[in-house]
Image (cartoon, rainbow, N blue to C red):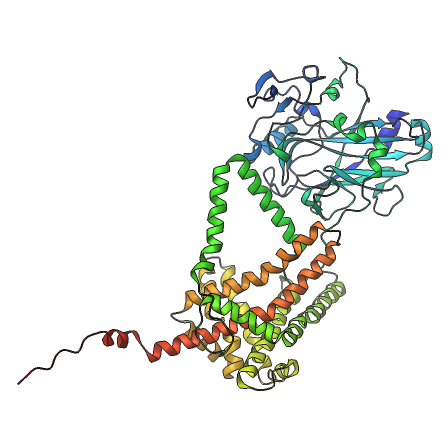
Length: 618
């Protein structure tokens, strides 16, 4: 009955498929396999670290189950390769084992009972050759368990399961067997191990972990493309006797190389609380796993940005573990890169009055903030108009996709077929931001001229140039995109993107045609290209980074990820007026510098420094 029970509920494992095997670390390079990929492997060493010693002593090469049975925490199974500088070493080794037939798809099944508790749990333990996540380590143990109210395997076969728990890092997620989230094929649950981390989930998604409650720190990915794996369950005893084929379970050492912190090799199943206390452990397991929400946001999705930040910080930690001096030098270099511009620029005096004047970078940033603060009611209202505009765009995009049931549009011309991605969001979003930006520019223009400068006044001011603003922005995007696609045109794209920074300002302030606006923007920036590029880059970074930086901290609260993204989107929308005000002050700045250059050209200054020769006497 126990064999039948284990076989009846053996899970179906769905892994992220390798598109470029075996070295694509974004996908799943490994699969649940036999411990014999390590035991008996002539390239694996059993090492011991005596108490207080940092030097390993090689105990055995190609250790077998008998060699590790009963050994304690000071022992490590050292696989070939360097954990913190893994490259593709472990992935190639595992691919070689699979090709040779030495890495079968296996899960170790264990029927667990807890003293003083009725019922039983069937645990399925997954062993992985290597863990390629934010933490990296040789060997990995993950898995799941299914609980039954019945006290015997025979009765459990008749009554069926009550709950299911999936192991995730140091914690897990549980659910009732009949929950909608529990996907099944007959009696076999379908589970999704995350790529690299191997934490097991109920569905395909991108999950967020803040390190609390046993979750990982970072994002676990089980998204498509996927491949199904049928694993063979091997029933193992709770207390394997010495000399049996499963005596390796009595090994409480590490199934990987010794490293600092999270990069240390993991201990085996018998070292886990749930091995002997499956029900007590299950009580503290959460019932949901937070996911990165679907849909779109106004700016960078905060939850997705958290994934990148966690991965970057983990990489830095791993780098510091490998070379502390190099990590310190890198941190100092990055700090100087940030602090040097702050120190070198001038921040005072700063003020928005008069609007048209030459400013240093620091003065410009402060003046933009002061102007925003002085007229925050109007500018906040203008910024928030981006929210309904983008919502309408997204709704239209979704409606069209559902009507044609595709993400692409296909045209047939004779025997030729052309297929294009739906461009609604790609085109409409930048236009929406351009319209909000135009409202801000119109507000500043009215403010300078002493005209009505409220929300409605800004809208009225655009009536004469609305379509010019739209088409000009479309033209900028089209030309930049075409240049970028060619690869070799990227430097030209960057150059022209800076040259055309003030096209909107020229149209709104000077009522120029589209062609003249492009020409005049390029002419004004000539000779001040690097200054314009630097300030524009700083403003763009402020716009893109502030929301995620502020909202990433919310990941460590109980706030749902969807609300975190909403907060990030609002911050993004509210920063847009600040950025446009800053660019408009930059427009005034380069105009003032141009006027100063005309009033006092270099040759005139040079001549002025020459002394007048003395008059000659008759």
